Figure 1 (cartoon, rainbow, N blue to C red):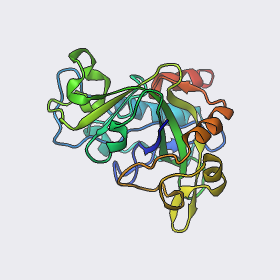
Figure 2: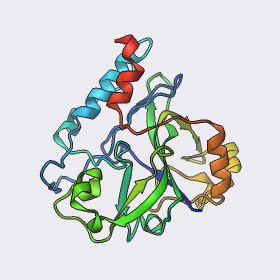
Figure 3: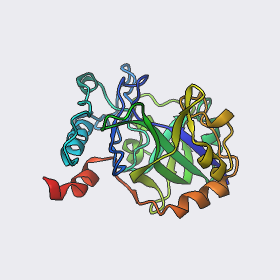
Figure 4: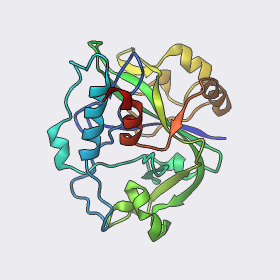
Length: 257
């Protein structure tokens, strides 16, 4: 078994903004990074940030009391297209199989990917909350160029008119994969960087990266003991949803609107 820890979502480098999280409830919004501006899309395959703007606004309205320190959705992103990857609704994830996603290219059914993000707390707490936001059990890995036409709209790497021959797309197993309903904080500021907390790192059995570093990496780290991580994760009885945001947020906050 192989397990990989992958950073996703908007941040200060990609998008110039971190999506909100409520530290008290651990509810959060998933906002993907922007696509490169030179990308062109197959007919019907482009996406808009309007949906994610709506999710942020709905999230803020659902907080009790309403968030006064949550940053508004950046208007600059509305002129861009989101690189919706992973797409939790479609249960896919794509990457460059020749570089950053080299380990993903070699994954087999039953391997797993853990997604995490740096989120901005809506209260006055300083810094970011680094937390697990998604989990996939791999069903299969395909070359992006081999994805059939009927599935082009399932992933960011196959929505483009020009699909890279080195890109790969993961399809996750339904029922045991998805976005976390509530995130799981794992990080702390330590030794001048964000890292996995010492106690959690020990419970996981370690990562193939020095001192639990998760702030940024050229290649996502592997779990040193994948089975140990899976046992840790299963004990937390996490609820996974096959949604990116809006519908699950509407359900969550229906009683407050």
